[in-house]
Image (spheres, rainbow, N blue to C red):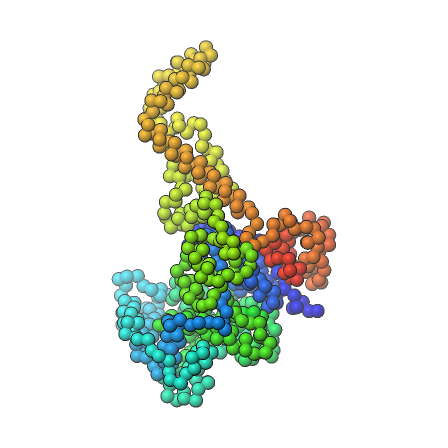
Length: 561
């Protein structure tokens, strides 16, 4: 048995970081690990437990504790029912390739001209600030052209004599498959190939990241590109014998060439049960073609095509990555029917429409057994989002400057019996201290504690009722915030949803986990002393076991560096 027959991973453990969607500082909770080798079957099992990959880094969000829960979404490809809009996207694309479209051509030309003007000026800014002079074409002109094209462009019917099934319809504009290419306005070629680096792909990626996501060129270097979209831990099942008709399982690029120019790349994983979409980048000059919506249907057609071939009978699904109910940019994923979301605790698939109704009322839920979380826990999550947006949170205390650090109770420890005194005006307080110093000293010497208590009670009664009410409200707010922090710490200390409690993992369980030694020899971990000598390796193994599940933990090799 070869080492490539195994999956070899190094766990990194849990991580709390800023959220890429709502931008909250501590809102994202994930568990991650690095995959040195990964069989496609093992990765399929991980995906079906809510995992995703970015290059060789594998991660699983903790949906319960995160501000923006990321649910795994998939659809059954053979049952795909294209909406009217989705059919129009394909029809317009096919008509553009075969017959041409003046509005589309003008929009593409305007964007290209604008980009050349920016490059000529030596600027790397893709969207100049308002008021900046531009030569020939300004962003406003381009947007107006695009808007005009969208208004004038009417939905067009599919070309004549074209079948209605998706597999045939979406490939009808590929010139390699048609004998009538001499009369076509453009030539479209779509090529499926194993994940690989080319300068052309890197240039397109840089253009996309800078133009669409506004990233600086320094973040689009070759190492960033390869680490994100080229490197893959998946072991190809047909490294030397693959063909586009029979690619096997592994990581692939689906490249879109228009008139022999690369305009888009779809990064996908072909797995035993699905085609999993990893990332899609395209030339912003061609955004009028709705390439994202077109490519999604193209990948659905790929699932249908593979499923009809021998050896791919179980490949029935199209995985669209994560779905976030509160993220407007992900709304389109729910428009592909029939779709299902992965229950984060039972790991069963639930119909999307049912999940959608539940998520209207709850940020996080298990779909098979929906139950709301503690309201104070949800309020704490809301503070992460509101504070980043600069909004006053309901739980925020304007009178305190203490941090929101969950492990720091100093802010609460400062709430003591002396708060009422120091809330008085300082000058008034000092005057009273001078006037009453003799009386207090006398009471202390003569044992007049009762008189002192009576005097202090009289002072409290003399306080303005409005001031007293404000103090009580302040104390109540502090108490609520303290209770909120307690509930948050208590819930986040629980095992992540859908995971075992590491405390329940026995010594015998740990013995079943394989480890890769420095000599590259496979052997089971059999001695508890080994854990003591490697900085809590036992706890690392236990947490890993809880996250990936018993079956995967016993099949993959844990490489502890």
